[in-house]
Image 1 (cartoon, rainbow, N blue to C red):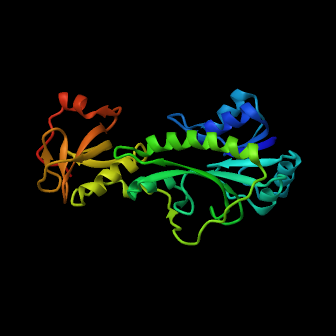
Image 2: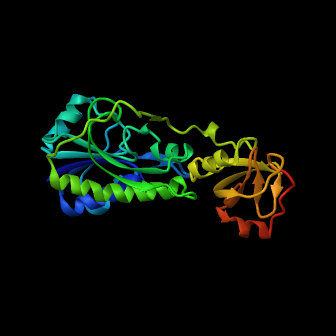
Image 3: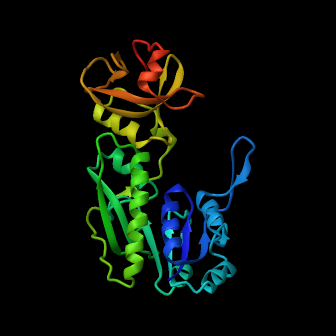
Length: 297
């Protein structure tokens, strides 16, 4: 089929590669290059870079509300548009332009976790499973009927990075199946069970050791690698990137043997951490040259 692909971050790349290998990708839409790095030079998005590697035409309008941009979109005469973490709200004229409309790869089991940060929120909430839903897009925020879905369990040590990569690959596989079967019947989302995955705010990243260990553990894993849950150790801001529940107890913030920290209830063991200005390291490696204080904040 003639496919328009619309995506921006790393999460979208496996789907682009999979579709380009089987279908005619007539255009790739992505966010414009943004200033990044020490020199603050414009850097193309991961999808932009991949499209160039594959020799695909790239478009990166700031918005899609300009009639000229909408006309250009329609002129591709696509059978379908596949949208994966694109980053812009699509106006109705764009949703209606492809012959079979626009379908979205969403990283949750809808209607749970509509919105911007479904992977983070699933881990933060302690969900037992997540998945990918392929949705027929409509004007509402992730409200369209579901064409297909696939599930995956969330393990007790999964981080957002782990689940991100797994869902990205699952989405790439599932979208090929959907494209092979279009048009197909879609199932309306139930009205019950709707939750919204609000964008992660950096203010959520400071660890409060008075909370139960289960919540602190989910905070560490759910915010890894970005923005990274953090605490103060001898006045140094340290990100904690992997953890697990551990035995032991003490005053909140008390350091127990083996980089284990007491919480309001129970304790967590830090598995990976990142000191200020350093690369992430396994806890055992960190402790070889670092004496932890009796308590951390």
